[in-house]
Figure 1 (cartoon, rainbow over the protein chains, first blue to last red):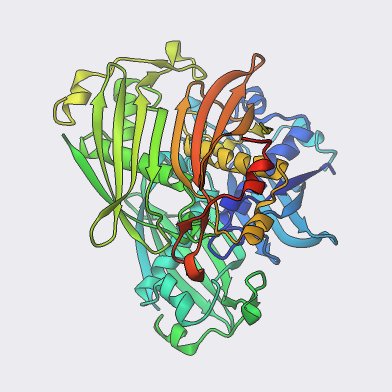
Figure 2 (spheres, rainbow over the protein chains, first blue to last red):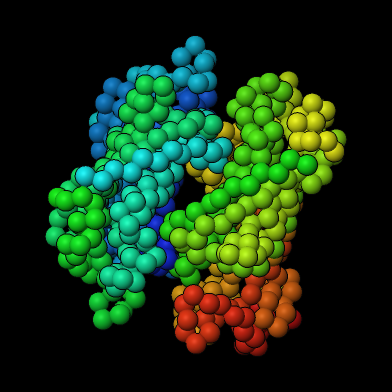
Length: 141
Length: 141
Length: 141
Length: 141
């Protein structure tokens, strides 16, 4: 399965008064990592939305365990892969690792759905089947 | 059990190009709702950190289901309560509701720990037992 | 001139490792205050975009002076007013005040433009004349 | 004068319902660019705070002109340099450029001050003279 590996520098503005990452920032990182994983599969988000006529791939379920905190100035590595494909949904697993031993600091599973605007109504969303050619770009399933 | 009810206006800047809330923003809302729940229990965060000599109450586990999206201009309601007390950890349940029927749009469980800096070392964190008087302020357990 | 007065609680997540507000957060506050000022004038953003066929009121110029820092747990007050109307642009002045004496902590001038998508092309923006009826809702100019 | 050049990918979550960058995000980018400029000068923020006994380099004045919007998926380049050194303050100029012709999309001047906690009181800040050796690392002034 295709895996993307991304290095992220923790910025001053990502951290809270305790000096560690304010946890919602991690979900911004993971969202960018999912984008990068798709790009590695040849799917540039802006083009993908047009090509497949979808409105986005919103998150419908999120599970995360935070084991080791990170501080500003840290460089962390996030490995991301699609761990499961459904008909119109998929799960991305992110593992944030850090330090010399690349200890796992965070594990996150985000479930996303493939959605379009029904009848072009920009205020509504409905799920669609994920094209097989999209799944195939990630190396089989 | 003590419950806090908070109304939140969804701002333009909370939303993404699909016009709906960018999901990490919800975790910022929930963090503020936990703060507000503690305040309702008489625990103002800045004072609480000093009184109990702790560094914070960081999140160690997060589970969330996103059922209905919200758009800029929406007013949503979040109900928050401590659903479980452990020795040095606790779980806060947030339910984000919206619309005339107050449909549940998001359900979130965040597990937090009571941590201090061991020997005053600002770069380390270790869990401490949550004082009974803190738990009691939330109405028994 | 119409003025909006908004109280804002500084949240833990708004603050940086120095314990004070991370300055980009102030611009999020001010953006919400401009939204609230328009609402006080009877212009609810979601409806306004549709009624006048515009894509938004993006910021084209920003000037801010930060005089007194704020910390998590502080309650600050922001007073916002349109200080100048142009043909297709306008300036909003925000004054963030705090403490018993309501000392001015930040003064900010944001210039915004009234823009639409030319020929419905969602990727382009062009300025439009601001309708007189919009300006009139703010109490003359 | 030392200049830092940074490429930034505009993420989905940086953009608003109009599909363009929500302007406070630019100030987060610029803050990270100032950090990167200091690092290029050999000043890693975490170490710098300790070495010089300072609490941070907060922004006290900000001026920005936004000329061309950016959209998710865009790669932009930010060039940053210290344009002026004062006794205890300095100005960083950021130029955000984009497209084949590297057109200037945003120009920003941020004034920062060198501050410490007087007598170790973490709730107070006072300016200090910037050491000459710090200024010298940026290539004379």
